[in-house]
Amino acid sequence: MDNYKQSGVDVHAGYEAVELIKEHVSSTKIPGVLSGLGGFAGLFSLSAFKDMEEPVLVSGTDGVGTKLKIAFVMDKHDTVGIDLVAYSVNDIICNGAKPLFFLDYIATGKVFPKKIEQIVSGIAEGCRQAGCALVGGETAEHPEMMPDDEYDLAGMAVGIIDRKNIIDGAKTAAGDILIGIASSGLHSNGYSLVRKIVRPNEENVGRYIAEFGKTLGEELLVPTKMYAKTVQGLMESIDVKGISNITGGGFLENVPRMLKNGLQARVKLGSWDVHPVFGYLEREGRIENHEMHNIFNMGIGMTFCVAQKDADEAVARLKVLGETPYIIGDVVENADGGLIYV
Image 1: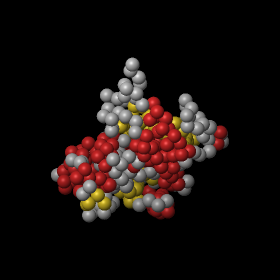
Image 2: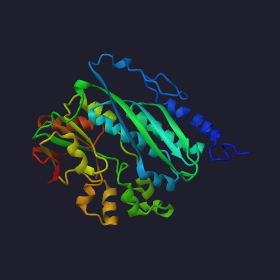
Image 3: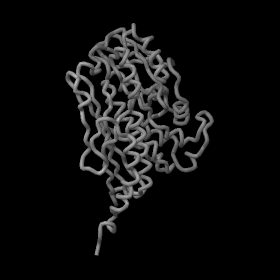
Image 4: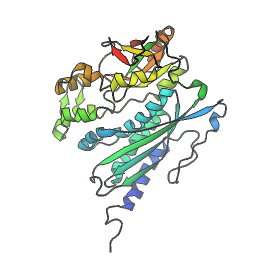
């Protein structure tokens, strides 16, 4: 007689994984969390925000993408959990939202409890960095649809902001200044090209690269930097007009998204320190420098638009918040919009 385990789904492995991740999930609990692990849904109270004139929930969802292939080769699965949280959180904070909670979805060919624990430990770390709670998730075993030793990740973040404080680019104007803050490296975009360049296997990822101060694999798995607390800290003292998360598409695609129509961003090349990983990829892949800037973040993880009068104070505040800020350009009138490099 056939049974569920023989079909490829081991419910007992799933139960073991749940037990292993309980401590990690609990470590993310913040005021407002009303539910624990094991319910059908995560519950979060908004009572702490009753003084807002018009509270608005802000949500975002994303995955990690093919960076997971590096994790598979290295058999290291905690840092990609941080990436998962960062990609959704770094999107919702572009509207100025305070992150509240996060949910994850793990699809895998076969549940290996210790591996699931590693993944969730990273997700929990990402939530702690963002100041939000991990209130729920799902682990789905997909035999025959995916290789046993592989998985895919998706997640969703929800934050809150008073409507009057939403940052949507409406106040951006010609003469404004663009301030970029340093990324931790590649973050999680462009990895289909990265993998084509470096051809990751156990031998390649284990090579020590002097300019990184670590192995190639370790550099490729550096997690995406979380900017939630930085954004909240900057908003306390500066009128931030626009925020852009520099993800896939680099500056060209993302910076114009924070400006209103009729404005163009001018980004000055050479105005910030480019992380060594980008020079390495440019050389190894023989990629044109202009193309690099239109694919990768090139060392700038997030960009702010502020009035010229506030620029120096914003830079000083960002340094106090532990960031490495650079004035990377300005905003001009141009009916065509978009971005140019100068």
